[in-house]
Every structure is written in structure tokens, then in C-alpha cells.
Length: 218
Ligand code: B1M
Image (tube, rainbow, N blue to C red; front, side):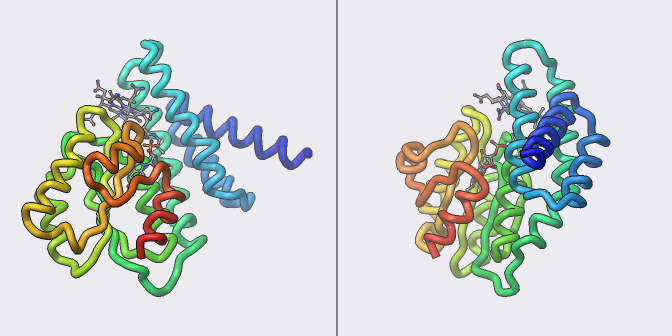
């Protein structure tokens, strides 16, 4: 019981460090979570990520200004930088299960969730080619054309950029690449029906689901 309370308090501190945009503290807490042997995914999902989402809610409510949201994002990223190598080490497989190309679509610079998905896929034995954020459609196509078979994961966090996922799929079809690429879409405004509408192979709601979905497509 005491241990549970301690973890809960620790998660609250992680959340708070991101909410308040305390970059150094977030990195320190991430380091401590490794030293204490906590479940890293739990720390990310139920600690740091809660903080960044709350910051977004405050921004939407007009209580935070954009610089405050940006500070929160910086704090989240500093924690992720500490945790990423451990996430990969935690579950790394020696043989690649396949190539995954991942990126956030054009016009969209949100990269925290995409990077978490990329990290989890690497940790689960995929060779991940991370194209970053604000990725031009042609860049996805260029990379896909280099591989015999691959998975393409597109992230979109804005309702104004999610349509770019559909455009990339259209271009894959036009260039006759669609048959050798399995397309999985994700990001907060996207959904299972959206994936069906635009002709994606699957939708994944989060990083863990992305691994499960791609495993099921092999
Ligand atoms: Co922005 N932003 N933002 N933002 N931001 C949102 C998305 C918003 C919902 C905030 C809000 O209004 N509450 C809103 C979008 C509204 C809408 O479209 N309907 C918004 C807006 C409007 C904007 C700007 C337009 C603001 C402005 O300039 N006026 C601007 C856009 C700039 C641009 O992209 N062109 C902007 C800017 C920013 C910051 C730079 C300040 C910063 C981004 C920093 C960065 O990423 N480097 C930021 C942030 C931090 C957010 C919120 C608060 C948090 C996003 C995040 O990192 N979440 C966000 C509000 C929110 O999400 N509640 C918001 C944590 C992350 C772990 O979760 O990204 O959801 P998430 O990823 C999850 C799943 O979605 C899924 O798995 C991940 C892990 O579990 N997933 C995938 C994601 N990608 C996947 C790909 C897959 C599978 C699963 O492939 C198969």
C-alpha cells in the first residue's frame, strides 16, 4: 500500500514538472524513475504525458499562453530524452521484425507522441526510420520506394493536418507503391473510422497499440 502511494506521488511529481514547464526537474525525475526501477511506460503514460495533456487543456481554456505550452513540451521532451534509451533496452530484440517508416505529416510539428511510438517500435524489434515532423508527402514516398515491404506510420495531431495522411495514401496508390506498404495512422484527432475512410490498413490509438497492430500485420 505504502509502495503504491509512493509511486502515485512520484507520478504526480512527474505530471507537475511538465505542467509547470520545469525542464531540469523533469529530467531529474526521469533519471530517478530509472534508478528506482519503476515501470517506464507507466511513468510516461500516467505521469509526464498527463502533464502535457493538462497543459494543452489549460491552453485551450485560455489559462496558459503558447510559450507556457512550449515550456511544458520542452520539459516533456527532456524527460523522454532520458527515458528513451532505457525504453529501447528494456525490450530490444536482436533480429529486425521489419522496416517501419514513421513521421508526423506535413504542416504538423507535434512530435512527442510520434517519437514515443517510434521508440516503442524500436524496443520491440523493428528497424525504425524516423523522418521527424512536418514531413513532406514526397519524403514518405521516397523512403517507402526504397524498401521491398515496409510499414508506414503517419502521425497527425491537428484536425487541419490529418487530411495529409489521406493525401499520402493517394500518392502511394498513384505511384503504385500501395501494395508493398502497410499504412497505419495515429494521433489524437484520428480514429478507426477515419483510418477506414482514407484507406489506411489500420489505426493505432497509442504506442503500445501501434506495436500490437504492426505485429498482427506481419
Ligand atoms: Co499543439 N495542439 N499546437 N503544441 N498541442 C494540440 C494538438 C491541441 C489539441 C491543443 C488544444 O487545443 N487542446 C490543438 C489542436 C486542435 C485541433 O487541431 N483540433 C493544438 C494546436 C491548435 C496547436 C497550434 C496550432 C497552436 C498555435 O500555434 N496557435 C500549434 C501547431 C503548430 C504546428 O504543428 N504547425 C501547436 C503547437 C504546439 C507546441 C509547439 C507548443 C507543442 C508541440 C511540441 C512538440 O511536439 N515538439 C504542442 C503541444 C505539446 C500540444 C499538446 C498539449 C500535447 C501533445 C502531446 O505531445 N501529447 C496537444 C493537446 C493534447 O494532445 N491534449 C496539442 C502527449 C503525447 C504522448 O500524446 O501526441 O497524443 P499524443 O500521442 C499519442 C497518441 O496520439 C498516439 O500515440 C501517442 C503515444 O501514446 N499517436 C500515434 C501519435 N502519433 C501516432 C502515430 C501512430 C500511432 C499512434 O502511427 C501509427
